[in-house]
Amino acid sequence: MSAVALNASDDVIEYLAAHEKKSMLRFITCGSVDDGKSTLIGRLLYDSKLLYDDQISALESDTKKHGTQGEKIDFALLVDGLAAEREQGITIDVAYRFFSTEKRKFIVADTPGHEQYTRNMATGASTADLAVILIDARKGVLTQTRRHSYIVSLLGIRHVVIAINKMDLADYAQTTFDRIEADYREFAKDLGFETITCIPMSALEGVNIIKKSRETPWYKGSALLPYLETIKVRGALAEKPFRLPVQWVNRPNLDFRGFSGTVASGAVRPGDEIVVLPSAKRSTVKSIVTMDGELDEAGPDMAITLTLEDEIDISRGDIICAGKAPAEQTDQFAAHLLWMSDDVLFPGRQYLMKTANRIVPVTITELKHKVNVNTLEHMSGKTLELNEVGFCNFNAAGPIAFDAYADNRRTGGFILIDRRSNATIGAGMVDFSLRRAKNVHWQDLDVNKPARAGAKHQRPCVLWFTGLSGSGKSTVANLVEKRLHDMGRHTYTLDGDNVRHGLNKDLGFKDADRVENIRRVGETARLMVDAGLIVLVSFISPFQSERRLAREMLEDGEFIEVYISTPLEVCEQRDVKGLYAKARRGEIKNFTGIDSDYEAPARAELDLDTSEIAAEAAASRIVEYLQENGYLDA
Image (tube, rainbow, N blue to C red):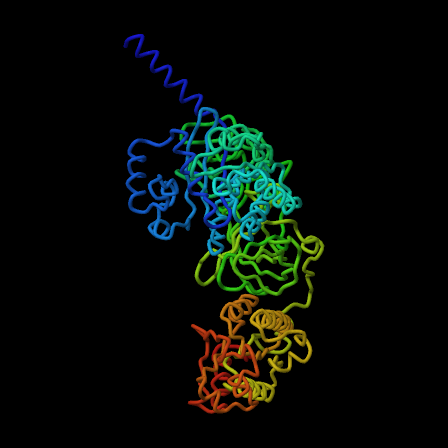
């Protein structure tokens, strides 16, 4: 090999080594719709000479077909790749782009500005170190500007660039720039940003993008790219305690057992003491294994397999922590929540919560307050709607390991999942464990449920009667209880109307109140089952999710769903209380079957239509079911 070839090879190796050592900055562009986010990224890539010839040719061709800038190149088309985006001239999905300069590597996320796509913006912000928030110089600070700024702050981003764009349409007036900067700084003073840098620019014309432009001689700061190349963001993850959420137990053969995952924070070395949560078992790191061999140290974002000195039980979803600084554990905590669903959030309803690699059922027990994104003031409320932010108390079905989101974004964040559709419906940031989670413990009692049930010679359960108003629920439940009482069984009936005179007298009939109504009744029924009783619950209980929540409060076989499936037209004909007539006249709001939905059970244990069989016959069927399944054995 010639000396020239060797030198060329050495140059390539040196270049690649230098490239690998460059720092990485992840940032997003966000702001209101049509503020020029996609155009800014496209111009940044174009003026930085970071596009290939074929990309430039494709851009010029696309501009002729879809461009919105006349004869000028439409730089937004570089990142607006979806057909719907090009047709409407907006950003819908998050578009990620990698690029590199001599000084730094970048990953930029172009996020949508429309309010309905706020969830996509939050997705892009969740991994970013810095946010470039665009403001149209003609419009100033808008509601969506404030919303995005608050979400950026909530998601832990501490550095923002305020790109006051389209200054060419404001004649590059310094007064316009100064007014918008003052307005924004006044709004953002309580958001906790470490740096706020305002830059006047025109993304379309390339002003103050790569270098300072003569159009703004009054501006003394840096252009955008030089600023992004030099700003220092703290390498916080490397400084945090070690966390490794276990994704996979690696067992290729009998001689090897390792625990695989991506390091969320901190560093680990062979010989370090670790503790596994939630089991709290301790051991020592034996080795750090990768595809490229064993390592002396591993840090954030590295995919590794740990082997340990001791054989301890570890499963997917556990978190391996630094022995001297483990994460907290709790089943009750407070968190900020960004609601991402068209369906309203109801406290008391059960959802699935995904943290790191673990999924647990969780209930929002209380909505403490909502946040007004315009004023940042706290507002009272019973529900959250699409794109609203609230501060809530949560109750998980089991303990979770976590760090406060302010301390560690990787182990303090979570998403909420709808149990029926599996759609992501919320993004949360854990603030702290609730004190009662540590101070309140279940008291073991010598006289327990089997002992109480044995004394009554029966198997405790809940007969949950559900159906429309007027379907015959209370009538059938009353007949069943009379027959059980005649048989010497110990029962109690919780009736929807009766409970609202006491336990639930503070609740109305809106969906949020209906959810809380059923949650309270479910908890009461559970205590009665623990007392050894056969409990008859007669409630409309219109939502499947709340009936499922009541079922899951009990042990297998203790919840018997009785669907009184009498059709709506028959219920209206009966209308014993005159409620349907009032609802049809608009005198009663949120009436189930008229202007509030009823979700019929999919797999009820018993399905009885009292328009086809008499109430006495329906009661007989229920008692027979109890006898056949051993609930009435002496």
